[in-house]
Image (cartoon, rainbow, N blue to C red; front, side):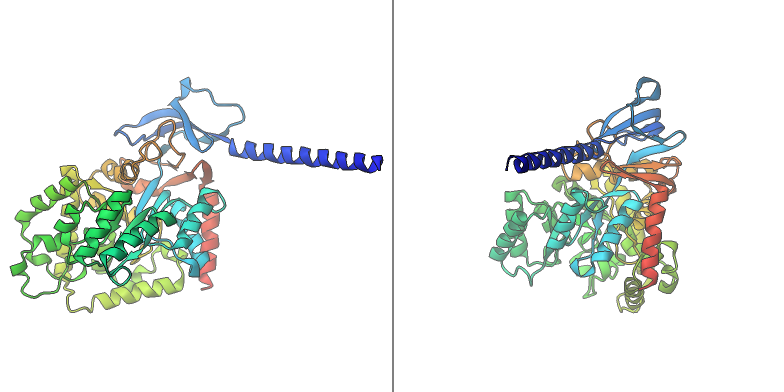
Length: 461
């Protein structure tokens, strides 16, 4: 019996020793230290390039940065060569979508497409509990992907037909763990109650503006964000001028009737409300351009999307151009107006964040952000000003400027290493050497391998 007890004691000691080794190994992984050596840093809290710096990352956070001559590289650190390269914060897609539980593989692919393009934060603008599960899996490191802020299911009149239903839904979605409310079509009184409850419990709400509420009503309610510049055109068109015409797609049917003298009033009301705008310029520009839908799906990034998604995009555009309220000249005017509004809102100091509405209308997740960046530059903003909307501004939208969006000690290690300076040319954001997401390093070779897997998978669909 004594011998048996001794054997059990020895086995228990061995198991304890193994557990301690495993715990130590886990701690070693968690505590992995990286250094970006001799890199040019774009801190994004100011328009400046910090040349020849070392940036130290420990435990998923930026801990130190400074001139390379003044920073000692920790022993055993993983060294990433940055000489001649540029390090900037990761980008935020502030109007993105992640597929649901009926498309699990597609959803996981979408998450990687985001980070492959330097998108390290996504505000998922329509969700279910499945996206909450993905959010947690990503947070725990079980699944590669950007940090997710998850919107609630669509708040429509069918879903919440009364003010009381709105009050109940807002409280339920808050307790369930959603980060914000996605607004759809609501009656004015229902919308008013939704907004009141949301403000009471600290729940952001954004997306569309119900037609009966209008831009003025949404701004009076201090809607957190307006996406796609929804209802701005309607605000600028006097009711008597509409003559029974349909508003069309985001105002395309009445764009020729706008009163330009009302633009300063719209901007003033936006500033007073403190509301954020997510322009999603590509949403309209992809539909308005003269390129045939069948040609658009031949773009290089389309190979990462399932065939049924591409087929849906082609059908939507072909159906759209056949609509009675579609007029090429008016749609072109809408594109120019949205660019003008972007510039005027920005110059007035209004809140703007980057978003492309992917995967919608030829917007491949991650890749579409680069189209959006270029479109915003085409609106008259400088490359630096545009990059601010996808970095520093995004963190300010979430009221967490100390978490991400700039390169400073204490910030989450969401970083993009570029081969060229994006402040000189916005297209240089695509010229990556790698991406770091919450301290995990993805060199471009690793990204390419995973993209090849996604491409191969979608060839079979």
